[in-house]
Amino acid sequence: MNGPGATGERILDAACEVFLEKGKAGARMQEIAARAGINKALLHYYFRSKEELYRQALTRELTTFFRELVESVRPAGDMETFLRSFIDNYIDRLSRNPQVVRFLTWEIGSGGPVARNVIAGIVQGNEGGPIYPVYRETFSRGIAAGAIRPVDPQHLLFSLVGMCIFVFLAAPILTAVFPEIDPSEKEFIEKRKKEIFDLVWNGIKAEKGGNDVRD
Amino acid sequence: MNGPGATGERILDAACEVFLEKGKAGARMQEIAARAGINKALLHYYFRSKEELYRQALTRELTTFFRELVESVRPAGDMETFLRSFIDNYIDRLSRNPQVVRFLTWEIGSGGPVARNVIAGIVQGNEGGPIYPVYRETFSRGIAAGAIRPVDPQHLLFSLVGMCIFVFLAAPILTAVFPEIDPSEKEFIEKRKKEIFDLVWNGIKAEKGGNDVRD
DNA sequence: GTCTATATCCTGATAGAC
DNA sequence: GTCTATCAGGATATAGAC
Image (spheres, rainbow over the protein chains, first blue to last red):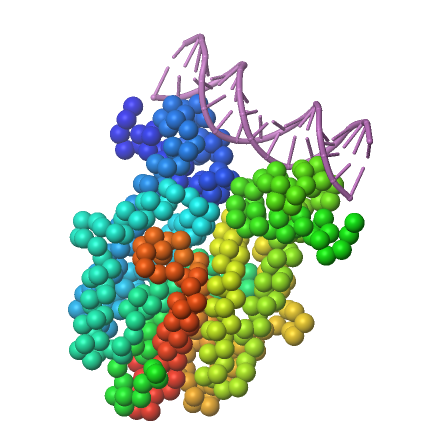
């Protein structure tokens, strides 16, 4: 019988879980089958090989993930509002899917073409058109209007993403070093948002006295 | 014959390369043997099992890596100097060993106890004693002296590390999205240092007018 | 479509000569 | 210490009954 709990979908869900947790090499078809409530033979009936199952599971997961994430950089209102919503959005989504990010950095670095292709396709052009130019324009206008210092928008983007991502990416390490923190806790997440915003907003907004450090 | 090119050391070097590249599950004893210029049997002669080889190779590599990295947070001079040297050090070392970081975030997240133990041991206490308290004190004094705003030192540390690490950790993704940049290039690295420092220093230094955003 | 049983291949590990 | 040859276990993939 088919429907919302169709076997094919249940397999993809299970496959995603296992691949994200163990990686492509560490994943076992047996475990995927078990989590989907079926046996190995049926895996190969639906998806020819491990390779093919990997490709399909990954494509589905990453497409969803990035489509959502990319919305975070759509500009809204003035610079301060935009910055705040960017950070809020990014952190909220990342804190809910830390495995995806960890998996991505690993698998792409290991030379996996699947993840690379999926990403390139999503980021370069989606329904609303390429999104980086939009982000870039927002900052260029802010700089031209004198609202913020003349920072490099691209590097600022790297800095923002890096700050937002780090604690979730390195959560297992952090909890080993600082037993008192828990990056999945709501209180910590809100504090994190506030600290990032304060640092960045103070760091980029134009000063009244005009004592700029840049040379 | 033994000496600088001793077989045991050559094996550890090769093992490190392969483990960092492919992960524990993806690594093949055959490949390690080949890169060390020997055969599989000799691997098991020197190191009983894959597990044991993994443990020793990892311990050696991570110990070296962290011992060097940890020196980055030793305070030196005033706040501005300290901040600049921290960023310089961190980025220089990370740009030279991006695989180590990528490997770490992955392997620890996959529940590997080896990496976790090694890290905990190194960061908590080494020759010079625990280093986080030292870092924390440096900022507390800076805040008390009115040199910088009352930021949370721990979150600032997370932000700094995140900003420094990101471009190297995500290098394969970034080059896929922005073909024009190359995170391993010297010019890019120096620009990155400067952008991070400017952002953070403007973000934390006490303002003359005292128009603080914090509530 | 779903199962059990089996084939095939690969990998970590060992035996034993030199 | 280093090699060749081989074993034993486990993984993907397939055959064939229902």
